[in-house]
Length: 308
View (cartoon, helix red, strand yellow):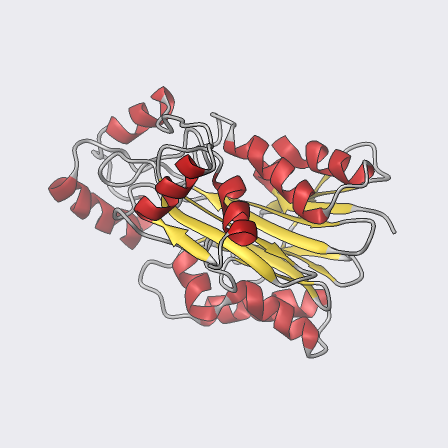
């Protein structure tokens, strides 16, 4: 059985490392961690790890989750500060604690206890973006941007709302034993209210894996995926007989029908139990990447666009 890695487009930074883990006989969990850690360390990616854009108060808060599709074991962290390796800490929660989700000061404490390297997460580039002014009107009268502008005025000074004010990295891997794992890491929406958790650390919302049926993970407006349990829904749709493509389309149709004042894009990557892969988005023109352990390099492919 060949190994496979599927990731959001920004995962191309780590996908080769993830595949190499599988080529060496490593587990799907190990591959997911290896891929995501490189994205977390990438200062050019302002949606994940080091260099992530901060909250309203200028603090970078990280969220992550990991799920083992063979055991249905999972671990997650939220609002982690001062440590870059959020996905590694999520694994520690899964493997060393009788809990699933640890957030805030508890996550910071656990990171110190397991001796993760402390990191000042706010890069100079991210800080410049955060401090730049909000003088231009919200593009397209985006209500989220308008609301953030309002909050910025009362809670912080001079941040800019970038065009791409949200983002996440997700990886799904299937190893040579057929085991599936899924991981997600993010710094969340830029200028979010302090302590906000999106779908990334919420198992079933932004991340879900089950060897029997497949796996799915989301990026984009996490509040929408939280309300619909989107990642779990994709896997459940496959469990009840829908094909991978049908399951993705159904999940995106549900997202498109959701009444959400702050509506934004949601993207999903997924695989089925046989290792077929696909991705979908509420917005056109989105892509994802995949690579098999028999391939020379990754391929960037189009996501299916499911319109309203």
